[in-house]
Image (cartoon, rainbow, N blue to C red):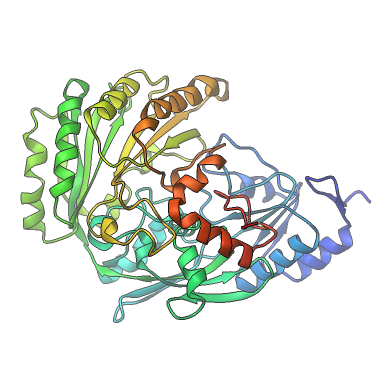
Length: 461
């Protein structure tokens, strides 16, 4: 029949089965030819143009269960979309079922208990809007368009990490649909092994339909922003950064980056967020202004929600992105020289290098306390190629790969959320000594590797 669904494996699903599937959903089921189909399959990373056979736009946990059961029963590949910000395009698949959670945007804040529950379609800009109404926040990302789900499940570096830990360190509980269609609650007392795995396991163990977070008193104003210097000062700036971050107060989270402003020349910049008393923050950032003559100084008090959006303009939806990343124990002179060399020769002005940090509270958590492992490697550089014309992919991909190849001898792991396309062989390195436990739990909760479009953990043999 003309409406029969043909899957990526070449199998067919009769229209009658699809209609029964649709009838069991509260949200819409989109197929090629629907007006909403193409917008629903588009990702933040314009490098990918994948076409799922079906898109289930779920309205709640019941829809997610129905979608998981349908995909399993019909042998469909599955992609799961929360915010759609996956660098390697894991948020959509060809010829399978896209389980789209983007419509699940419920948020409930309990200001007395300093807790918040949020659904997986929520983005950090939404979450911050609700929690900041009460002067509260949790560790989130650095691009406000990022979804809470993917960031949380991979670890969650952000502007509050040094004071309040990673996002996974603030996750109190999760409701998760497993590969067999069960809805389980995972926290410190219920299914604690699953809870351990979810905190860094990157979506390998199920689809989380509700996250509960610990909140902290933050804002509405913090001391933060950016100060930038010319490339001629880059070595001195990064040497300062390497020393300063090791002794900075927990309230101050600091990143460094090589970026090129529109129409300008490449610069080295320091970004920071001080989440304590404003007067103390002003004192804490004074040394940032003592490195010479900055080409741009935008450090000072600003709304926390503005701090959370400070990188938004640099990562627009629809550009082509390719990234390589790793974790370093130290940012020594050899690594600094490599970063300067490649920052000066990037083929696209839109590309850059961001050096994230895992210091303070985030670094003091035992590496086996959660699935997130690289706590002892406090520098997490990510090399991001960004370009507009697909024809320029080869040189931009090669630049990121070559830069990472030069840095690789100094690396000791990688942040799983920064893994790029074709990085499957690096997944064990992202988890280190935690990998075997994760593989055993994968066998327990997903023995057939149903959830495999992710930084995949293979079930133990």
